Image 1 (tube, rainbow, N blue to C red):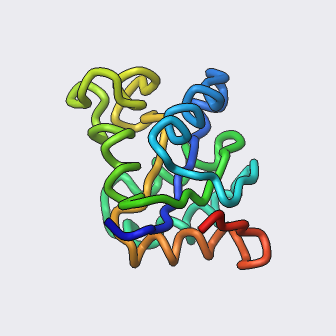
Image 2 (image 1 turned 45 degrees about the horizontal axis):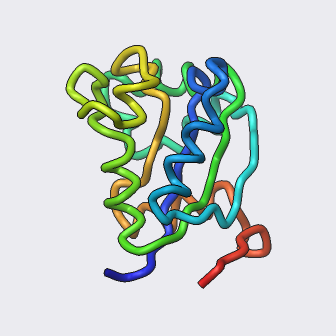
Image 3 (image 1 turned 60 degrees about the vertical axis):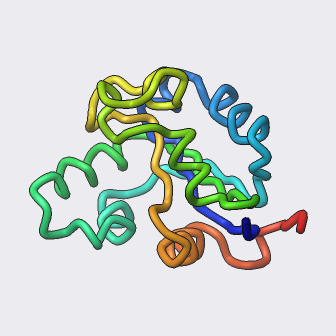
Length: 142
């Protein structure tokens, strides 16, 4: 399994619930290292740029409004098979369909307020990490 990087965002609902520490614990217990982290409050325009790939989807406007409704914690994660591992830890987008013990099963309220975002591919991870972190802000352990 190759060492990869991926982006994780603790969304406004999970920040509000004060479950950041539990989410970080899950990453670290599963051999994902945090190589960059920052709390930001995205504007609607910034959220729109980040989620531009979904601009034509019916949920885009609501997604951008939600992601700009409060602070988020953006993290660059690194580890073996990081993209897939992060997505497994998150669980299904709809928390009602997420496996027990996943982040979304434990902390998400709905398909919209679903606690976390994670990159869906290595290529998108590179783009998404670049959105939040210049290279000088990443501190690889590899």
